[in-house]
Length: 236
Image 1: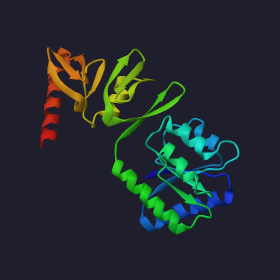
Image 2: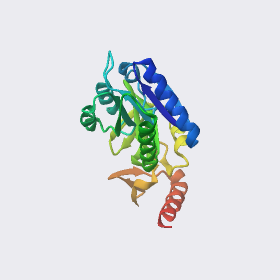
Image 3: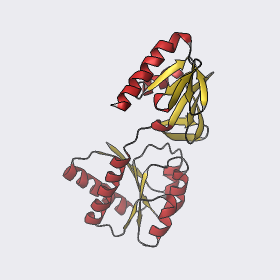
Image 4: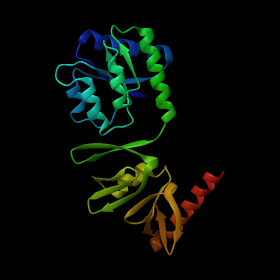
């Protein structure tokens, strides 16, 4: 299932884009979940990085597509953006927000389907695993492979990642359940470690991205077995 947002203030064009998506779905067998917005400010407000593809009109009444894309990119660097416009010069400006492509109005199904196929191809190439967490003032999409470890502090969880530290509320049990099949293992009560980023074990500590995390006595056997199994899988 691919989650798509259509952001278009002209009802006729919005309906046409939805119709094109439904036609493409019937022809290709690809399933789409489609959400409609009539202006840029609507999608930006409360945006939680929940879409795979955004079809974004450039010229809208309250917030134009370029401004909306800039706001979206602040929290979601991965979503594929395709601009819908009647002026080709916007394509150049689109590079600033890493837009994949643009479609000129009036939109033809052939041109649209070509760009949609390209977008789906880009998504499949990325094929990375993500999770979205709530943060103060919004949400943050995290690349799971780039999480070093998760730290529990009271009622908060701190995700230590390649892009920095991100704090959210929650329990270690909840996040452990979400990540248990993705090579994460607790080394003690307060740390859930991504085994991919364990550089070694020394003096009873796991070395994770330059940080020493204590391996508790009660979890030592489980952690070392998980680490050995992971290294064995990688070597194979």
